[in-house]
Length: 493
Image (cartoon, rainbow, N blue to C red; front, side):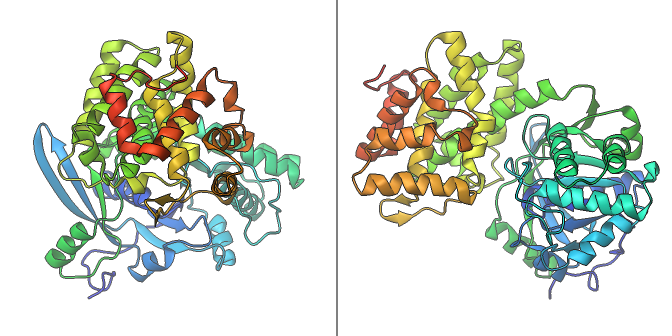
């Protein structure tokens, strides 16, 4: 029996008040769960309409289940193992704007709509000058949002009371500010008029946010358990840890409209999200990004397995405590305490967090999560953080797309893949050596926003480690790092 609203009690839909760009595991285990909690405990009485941000997605599967799915939250609470299983009913339906553009625009005509939430990966908030106002739809998320806002502006004749509260969850610094900037760029590019531009900037609110909950990829074993227990087939079972945190920068009146505190949720409304973001991105997300290619190329598939591994565990411990924490300008005791909590979360005995599920768009993730640590460590210590450089070499090797003759399912934007594919093709044709591959990657300003070969010693050390990975294998390089207590074992030191 397929899960849907005809075979579930008390599954009526609340009024649609939230537009959500993205239907992936994270938003369903984080935001949509929070909406469910607010509906149940704070009389929020709101449902979510999910918009598929790219041409291919899961909206059809979501609609086949009438927006319903099961969340399994596992972890330690007060030192005790806890597993909660909950049917989430907060999503009313999904829309694919590539096939249902008229339905997409109708969302703007709903006078009750109040919030826009998104998670389109770090690469999702970007201005694309090739997007046009008459495209059905434009390609980028900010362009799609601009079209929607403009339609709402016209529908309600510029009524300032019909502005929206926009809360992006993409893990980039000042995500709300950057999204607002992109929308303003489209206002200018498309000549949408001064009145609309004023409405966007005065009637709408773009918040900067920080989200924190580890959500692993789809686990067929958990899905099998849930389906056997519930007696229905749920194709969208999602796992998450017990811990959750959402920090939202904005005026306190937003808190009154979004009453997460009344539902007992760990949602903070603050004046400045920056210190929360820096700590989280560097110490939680940074190690994830460092670990992903290193673990995968070493034959280890899961985060917990890697962290508890006698060699890989020491490698990531060195990266966190010897390189990431010392680079931050915050109280050391506070950072170490936070890092200890993060390592415990990595060791969550309930969650099988596949490193491949973290690998999507790894280039933009390294840029957002690791690169600043490299620069700041170098500035403070006068030397490069060895393990973080190893991670860059591992990333480049990972993006080769093969391991021991078997393909790696590398997923990134086409422009990113084109750069890596070109460099590795030249390597295979013996037109480039490992140093040439590194140079082609690190000098590409489209990838990084700068020429990374200008970081003193970075290209040489990365090339040295890439050569070692290609010659000896990833695990051998990790062993050397661990045995050298995280000190550079390369010829370039």
